[in-house]
Image 1 (spheres, helix red, strand yellow):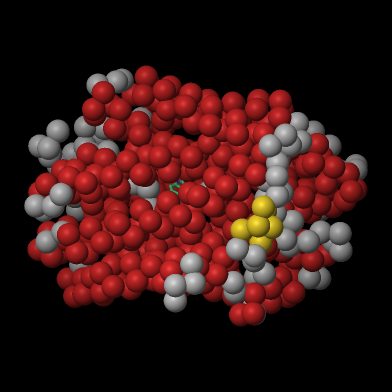
Image 2 (cartoon, rainbow, N blue to C red):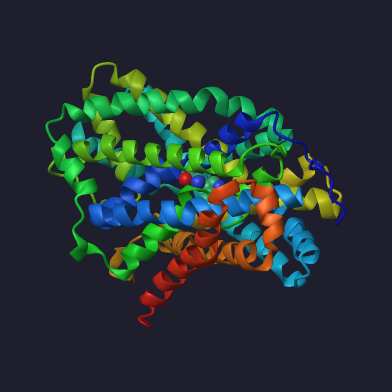
Amino acid sequence: MSEVKNVSIHGQWSSRWAFILAATGSAVGLGNIWKFPYITGEYGGGAFVLVYLVSVALIGIPIMMAEVMLGRRGRQSPINTMRYLAKAEGRHGIWSWIGWMGVLAGFLILSYYSVIAGWALAYVFRTGSGAIQAVGSAGIRNIFTELVSDPERLLAWHTIFMVMTMVVVARGVKNGLETAVRYLMPALLILLLILVGYAMNTGHFYEAVDFLFKPDFSKLTGGAILTAMGHAFFTLSLGMGAIMVYGSYLPDNASIARTSIIISIADTAVALLAGLAIFPIVFSFPELSPGAGPGLIFQTLPMAFAQMPGGLIFGTLFFILIVVAAWTSSISLIEPAVAWLIENRGMTRIMAAVWCGVATWLVGIATVLSFSKWAFDFNFLGTVKHNGVFDILDILTANIMLPAGGFLIAIFAGWMMKEKHSREELALGYSYTVWQFLIKYIAPALVLVVILNLFEVI
Ligand code: TRP
């Protein structure tokens, strides 16, 4: 297992662009269109957004480069990559735990991710059938409440989405992934721009711009800072080996820095556009509140689609594209586990995909029930959460496991690996020093400070 070739046994991207598209496909997903707006709304806007943007720049980009670099050097699943690299660098085998923790985080995230993607699937049909056109704003909110309080329906959509994910994973990264991303991501961007154009005419556009970009630091609680930083990991797919496993399929001659920066900018742009599309609509309906929680986009966007010319078509298309964005992300959540099963258990790709799919599907049932039978309120650092297990899974993964994984990746890449090796792999020339400074000191220190601050240690 420790012999490394220049190409992964699982295949390789056909070009640098294929990698950029696939990694962008992984990064751009529900995190941008569903989660970013709703947590921004919950945590009060501008100041939260600022912390998120700073985290992307100072923590996200250097850690993304580190993940791609480790992946490409290891050329295996994250568990085996970390084991191999630890040995090659003369370090303890315990570093492979980064890979194990990542596999667990990926499972847990996908388990609820698939349920939410199921909501988007349901909305393809809710909008496509014209159901939202006739009912008015109260009716639109009812449609949402009815959907999430019906575990049977949620389970059905969750099942369909899991099957979709497994089909692509079973076909392998290249065949399954590249084509989906190449055409559908640009389409999503165009549709978002159309929606922003619509939002500009609601008369509340500047209110939304203020909300998103004018920081009110009095709203910046410890919980808000942690959530913003955790979201930087989540939205860039960092901290659990997804980008590492994609990096292991990257050709040797591609520039890691340039690709990472392009991916991060694209991901951030999509999130900000989603915010600019959604908040003007929120502010133009007095009965809607930015803090509505996970249902935010499902209660606001249909209002716009119900009113705008061609709304039926745009709405349907938009939810289709959200599903696709979620689809290209979900495969990266499970790919590290699948790659490991193939390497270490000698499974075929199809069998590995089926096992992982079934396990994730089962865990997902907890989220299905979180919006009805298993719903309960609890207080998380100043914000009241209403959706029991779902919220706990989200906090555990995005706010704890991903930052912890990212921290360890930064320590390994910055301190455990010989400088000669990271220099060689990154091939950065002069700017290597900038990356080195960020990965050794800034990124790990910021993660630590945010976490310590939370426990009021500092
Ligand atoms: N980044 C994706 C999103 O924003 C979700 C995702 C895919 C992810 N792969 C990941 C999150 C790995 C964390 C880790 O929707």
